[in-house]
Length: 377
Ligand code: NAD
Image (tube, rainbow, N blue to C red):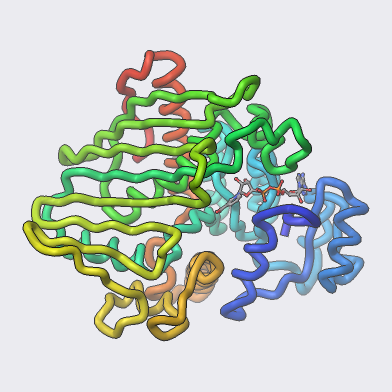
């Protein structure tokens, strides 16, 4: 692991997710931008001293020559560091699991995607919400035609936590997220809009063709958007509306997706992830619950507990980790990756997300909210 040290947010979730299905051991790391803090964190996590590295370049050098070298590295650092770290590990022949957004520029995202292809290494991107079983069920239902042709896609990711200038009050996570050099061009749209964008595309299977965006910065002095409204035109005529907000008081992690087709609609909410609401034309809403035997394979393989025993965020993240493991093993063995590898987010999804953010910011900043085509869909 690179990053994810003491006081970091997502590294701990990665560690839970890696352990739950027993596909990974955490054996080496450069856990912190501060080497000493990293070593002390490594010691607390029972990492051998000679595999706790002061920085990621030391880790690449140290690991590449070992007989028991790592198979894959997880990159859990702020956005601007993803590119150099992923590049160094890919070039050294390691598979990579990278946090989103994959890079801070489209140029870097293209380069990283190409590098994954040319080295033959796997580059996965942690679009967390595509790990939920009921999201897989929704995807299967749309693909099966239960909704008919999709007409409208509504997706939103509202959060409250940056409704005040917490970046100036010592909040580590908010500090780099509001610094364009570390975060990239898109504030809320880069941080959480990318999740919403991926989720909408994942469930509907639709390619987005163009965006028109209105961004806002409500907290005084903040350099990046903390609220974004984006209209999306999908292939085949479907219309999308995406809202990301870091200033939505009362919202914790209110990621919500609604898909409306010619014959029915689906609704899923991250804070009630075990349920999916399906409504047929002129019918009453039906709540489909996780854990039932009649769900599709994609939902069933990603389920661990019986219906009524709730699963959540950590299991969804585990499903990604187990999917990455399936894809990496399949690559090594030549055998199919099976259901767990199905739809697993990889570098092209990472590239699409970065290109989406770029087009959104360009639409707002350079075209007064006008329509711009998407380069990668
Ligand atoms: P954080 O600030 O909490 O943690 C960052 C960690 O990286 C810290 O331990 C820091 O010391 C370390 N670090 C920074 N530069 C480093 C370097 N060069 N070498 C080694 N370690 C370094 O950040 P966070 O909130 O955990 O976010 C990290 C990444 O995860 C971001 O890209 C963010 O967008 C992403 N994220 C994804 C999800 C998700 O659902 N997939 C959720 C939260 C954050």
